[in-house]
Image 1 (cartoon, rainbow, N blue to C red):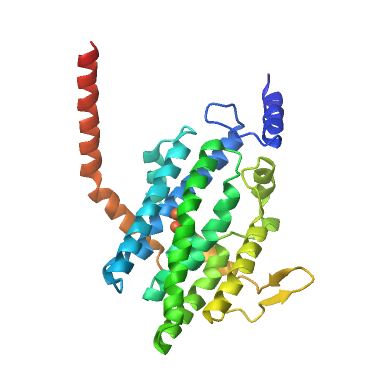
Image 2: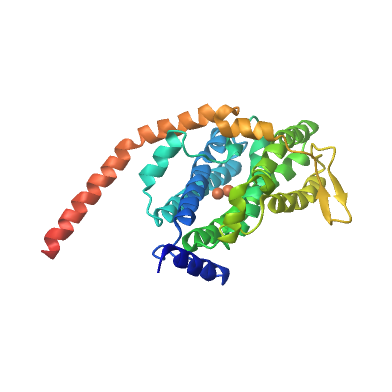
Length: 315
Ligand SMILES: [Fe+2]
Ligand SMILES: [Fe+2]
């Protein structure tokens, strides 16, 4: 079969809702797109630990500290499953990590914003993990098997993350006037960047159509963003907090909330490396990578020794 025939056969296979597995034939563009997307997703899980890690030592109680530690540890696990699933496409983890550290590979722009108060930790769980769930629930049905299975497992944990954040917000909203205003301030700062997490409107992206056809993506960025807004507005109302958008209103005909324009210039600046914390985040990651070198080397030396022993045993 030539390339054209293989591509058509692949498309029919995907159209029939089959999952593509690591050893199956796949178009080069499909493989490349997935490697890029899964690696970026993995980097986001890992970099995403930093803004929250900033508050571990300052969590207001032992209970909050234990919860936050467990949540951040979950994110490390998500990064590991995702690097693992990208590796099934023939790319090495070290190569992906190098691309992150050199700035060549991106991660979610949301993690380039600072966490200024404890309410930011609640807001991140509520909005950032909330937005991640909307995106990831849809990715559970992505056509690449290893990615789809990683998503199923990750989504179970993400819903706890969202709830722990919302629970912090409930406590603050029912607290003193100062606590409530801290919650409102965090919502004001995180609302728009959370909407940006879904990426630019699909109309502006040529990759989107192909990714939908290959069923890598199952819903458009705009559809997912709308879903997130519809889900989150009643949650803000329950908290008695105001979403910082004067154009936000229920549209009876559409059966959805209308909302204001996103500042895409801000988004582009953050993606290009000019967000408030881009440099700080990459630097922290680089330091962690350098400080962990001896651990990686020791693990490799140990693995080598074990495999030499096994060869002796079987000889
Ligand atoms: Fe995660
Ligand atoms: Fe999470």
